[in-house]
Length: 130
Image (cartoon, rainbow, N blue to C red; front, side):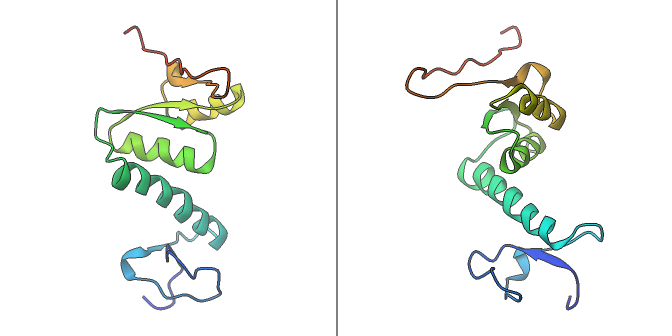
């Protein structure tokens, strides 16, 4: 309602002090979340949700490899995929980033390092004994 603290995804025209948005694209902000965090939340979780549900059509029981798993969109993808019932394999460039992915919720054996480039085209994924 008018006067509530909200965040939204307008698609375009959001770089303004005021904007018009469809009610379906507006979410209330918790009292302890500032506007910058609310905008970030909508961006990273909206991106991940759209990619996994609308574009990727992720289904329960499927396995998802998340590259850049310690970044904002990667963390959101891990959390959303888990909520959708998927098994998540998190890939990140350092042990510290892989540790964060484990904290977020990938299984300990499922946070891995990968190297994609001119010299390597394969991704080795732990199979949990399978």
